[in-house]
Length: 220
Image (cartoon, rainbow, N blue to C red):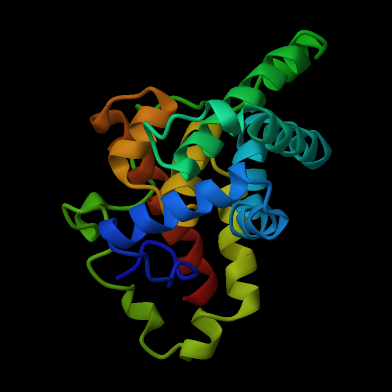
């Protein structure tokens, strides 16, 4: 079962991805506007959601993403291909968002720092046995058995999922966005965020568990 109901895409094989990466990079470096527009179309939404996981405010997040795109354009000639283009771009978003958050924090009132616990040591939101070793749900809740598929995959359900993600603590939110929305692999997320593989798994499990709980309540 897929981790989130709106992630139902197919990804290219490693060989296909490498070919796409090389040809796209050549087009971008040559100033191909269509290639850049295609890049924006694929990544802008997940980039914005990732930025919001750091700064909270949508307007600020949009500024972060715009600055990230400008940084990409200015730095493209220096991109050496040691990672995928996508990983490089999202790494820029994270760096810009963190810098902006630090800047915003210096002007926030002291009371704004009294927020809910964002540690990774909290208990899972739902029973861990409901998940397999790969982090995926073993099966949907029994309460979903009589729910029409059109409702499970409908627009209102997707909005509920997005709302659940937005309500997560920032560290969990950025991991689930990178894994289940942007489609990064675990090792890529660990490298992007500078966290251990175990820490990445814990954050992802807690995030998926919270989203599952919300879906159980909504569809049950």
